[in-house]
Image (cartoon, rainbow, N blue to C red; front, side):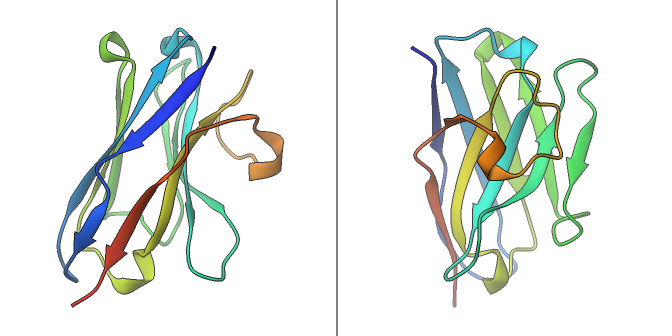
Length: 124
């Protein structure tokens, strides 16, 4: 059974940093693109970063460019999201997701495999 588990969320002050992890089981992660999605309070879930399987190219939403870094360690079946210079607008539940042939740029409804999410709260 394929499973994704996020970890690393928490409460952080504006300007702070957090490192999220997404660990997969039941799948060979190296063959899948992995995306990080964020759902802020009262907002729709959106793709904020993604890393491809074929060449490990990365994608970032404009709102996080220059502040977030996505990386993967296939040996550990884990994708990381390093977040810095956090603002209250980064508050939300962060999910990792994947699907067959997913290589970034899809809407949440197009992906079938999701983690349960980890809460990130940026507040003074």
